[in-house]
Image 1 (cartoon, rainbow, N blue to C red):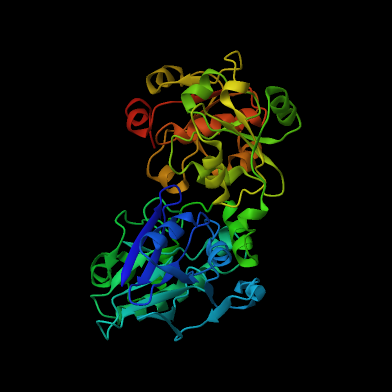
Image 2 (spheres, rainbow, N blue to C red):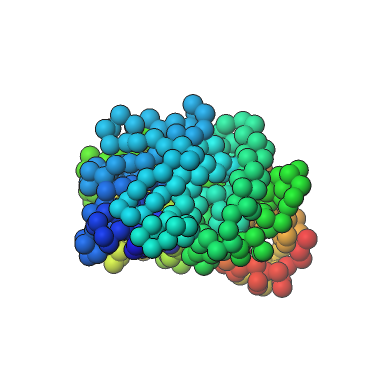
Amino acid sequence: MLLKYFYDKALAQASYLVGCAATGEALVVDASRDIQQYLDVAEAEGLTITHVTETHIHADYVSGSRELGAATGATLYLSDEGDENWKYQFVDDGNVVLVKDGDSVMVGNIKVEVLHTPGHTPEHISFMITDTAGADKPMGVFTGDFLFVGDVGRPDLLEEAAGIANTKEPGAREMFKSIARFKEMPDYLQIWPAHGAGSACGKALGAIPSTTLGYEKLFNPAFQYDNEDQFVDWLLDGQPEAPFYFAQMKKVNKEGPTLLNNLDGLTKLDRASLDAIVESGGLVIDLRSKEEFAKAYVPGTINVPMTSQGYINYIGWFVDYEKPMYIIVPDGADADAIMTTLRSIGIDNLSCYFAEEDVITGDEKTMQQISAPELAERIQANGLVLVDVRGKTEFDELHMDGAVNIPLGYLHREAKDKLPEGHTLVTNCASGYRSAIAASVLTRMGYEDVVNLTDGDDVWAQHMPTA
């Protein structure tokens, strides 16, 4: 048996290839949309991808299962659990087999058993792996978004992101039952999750790639509760804000993602086109660093710097999947590679881009910046409003006195109701990254006096009164 691990740092997403050396067959679990990595590894190992599966209808990225099935002719094994709202709609593709709890599939000598593990989503399944060539007991479990290192999948996404009311508490209770089932399983089982630290699919995911069930029983908070109501209260408390694009990912992965061969490539446009698009209200994301953006930016564009590995998660808060989106590509960056990254969260309506060297002259508008010591001197100024764009949990733990909390992803929807006109708005966050994005969002919305606090919370907490 061969086990290969793949990790997308931008999405904190893990996928796996399991191969049987004896027969040359291979299974891919929870594939991302960029399937070349699996094809390359399979070829290098002398394997043929014959089986493709996924643990659930993903919310945070476009699944590569359909893409990989089309490219290889492999059979897709998809969950048939859950109610009618969570059934795959592309089962007529011809290479799809629906599976339920208790079903098993052989990949050469490798036995793959299906376990229904609802809670994160109703249709969620996990896969228990036994290498029958050398053992009669399972080695480990691909747990998807059910069980992570140090955490479990959040049950509130259907309600918070997909808008399906009254699902988070029932989901939490299903999660309690799934955990109870795993409490009875052997401690030696390896646990291979689908996400690591940085994912919004849980609230406290560990950064190491795998764990054992015995270790999780000892140290994962989810395993410490015997009372269901207490477990539900713990699980639902403190979950991070769910990005709006999660609802679109659920829809895409349920209906079946468009195959990449059917999408257009990128066309480069000029400054006149950029000005016209911005004037018409089109969404243009400037991927340059926050420092470069502050020096010269085109009003109406939003700055989401590529300097953060998870930059696409922030873009996902603002994209309208029904309209075209455009990007300003920094000098030296690969536009096609960026397009591939953006397509991982379903931004398929990206067909045009702007090169920094073609559209930024240095004569554009500048973004006001302020340091924490400077802010401390000006804080008494009449009309100064602090806009804290961190998450609610972060804000509740520590914030500057008098600050208004609007998490970054909600800013474009809530600013008009919560922020006054005619005042200086100072954006802040934990590092200066989210606040830079926020400042560009507010200027796009028409606020004229916006200042970005460049210092993070480790600095502003020393200079400003906190609550």
